[in-house]
Image (cartoon, rainbow, N blue to C red; front, side, top):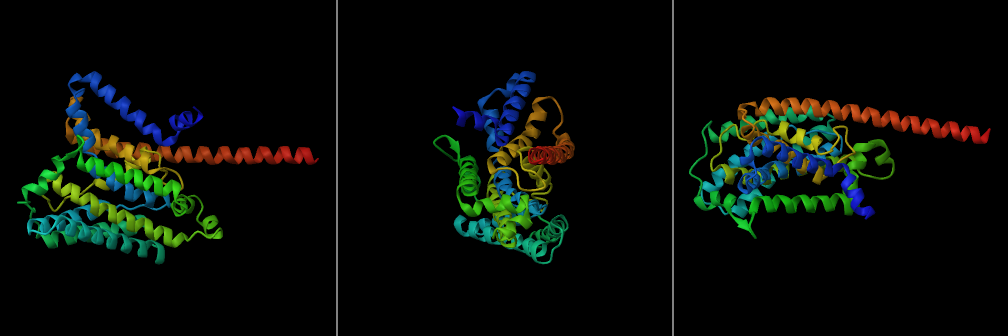
Amino acid sequence: MERVKSILKSREITPLYMIIILFLIVGTINPAFFNSDNILSTLYGSSIYIILSIGISFVIMTGEIDVSIGSTLGLCASVSGILIRDGYNIFVVLIAVILIGGIIGLINAVGVVDFEISSIIMTLGTLGIVRGVIYVITKGRWIENLPTDFKSLSQDSILGVNIFFLISFLLVITMHLYLTKVPQGAYFKAVGDNPNGAHLVGIPVKRTKRISFVLSGIFSGIAAIVFASRTGFIAPIAGNGYEMTIIAGCVLGGISLTGGVGSIIGSSLGVIIMASLSKVLVFMGFSSDLNNTITGALLVIIVVSDTLLQKYSVNKNRKIRLSNRVKGEGING
């Protein structure tokens, strides 16, 4: 019973309550939303965002940021589209995009960890470079005429569950278990919470940050396969703006931008909320053109709230330590 109570009160379960409340509000305003097809399509449509959130969660937990995930997704989707169109096996394509994503992540890692460039600046630069590479390899044209069997993957299901949503769910559970059950998994939060303290107890701080950026790139590559299959074509602007939605969703899901706090489950639930916005707006009678505006506003609100909560937590802990010290001195006196 105590275990159930602790789960219900945990920080990572809060976004689940928010999803339920959001769906209830939308369904009350427009009962047509309370249709299993609508709800399932909303959840299934978030698969790309969930997979992206897994990778960047590792980065944010270490106290860094990666704004290049959208362009990395776009490049990997473009490469996957070209290879699939030219007849390559999907497993070969998957390996190719994982390697590309991993290399981009490694480049970010070298810049941030070894050259000590601010992660926001380094990944912003990478974003621009990768976006330029996309235009070079696509010549500014859409990649179309993808095989029907590849596009139909997004409609396939296992035991009635969409295959890509099932894959994203399994990835979330696997990475959650890695973070919580494997000793090395705890390194990411430890580095984000106190890098100097982590170094003193023997945690490889630099290597942990490198791994986090590489994972961010790898999961961007995996998400690119899902993106290419779902859309059926790849435009040069593919993935543009995704980073804002993902980061907002991760913070909404309980991951602190200062690092050291959060979970993969929480971030995945948070991005489901953010990914649902466009459909929610339509059912509430608003234009989906407001999606970017609302996402940006939510990001600002979420970041400000996170900052205030962190300050409150720091001040509260400082008062507790001071109170304990005063009590201790009183007893000794």
